[in-house]
Image (tube, one colour):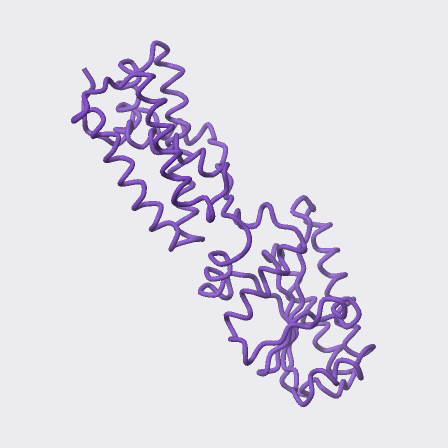
Length: 300
């Protein structure tokens, strides 16, 4: 599952999907079924072009077998409601003829679900449901990646603060990073900054690799916010350099603490309504690690 949905649940997923699909189709062509009726009728949204949408957020901890079983159950249960509640559904569809039934998932983990959808497409067509197109009908799975522009919109203007995980650094990443230009920079400068250089270097290496990975995830999932963060980051890096070049501060532990506080203040002022407190805190130290790793300045 994409990291951006790691803290979602069924309710958050449904709200996200509604915002995404409303943006994709535009309000005049999109209708959301009132929440109290959704469970009975087996659909959450429909569109004027003949699409019915149902949302489902499987437990991220499901094994493959559990995942497949629960998604198939969801498809089967809600597809069967198309015939069971045909009169009710037909009333609020008015004269719209449905050409596709779509289940929106965070991800599709198995190709077997595609075959399962095809099986239920045939069952629906065999049921002769009055509002289903008799020839041009399909049952399919889509994810947020199917609607990239609207996915970005829903993420940016959703109610949730950005709270991407800072991934654990694997041993293979540390091995690859070792003896690189940036690793040597961190190692050399740590001896000037801390009286425990090995521990400090290890911490800064971890934070540097984490913020690099985080910014890449941010660039992919929240491109507009990524650009804003990059601009803020350049400002923070410049301020760190000014503290040494202009104000004459020594690059020691006191300097690091002062910069951390400064970074946190700046990031909070700009991004408190966009990015979670946890992410902001990690960014504060992350940009210190970037400055130590990437700055060409030699400490003396």
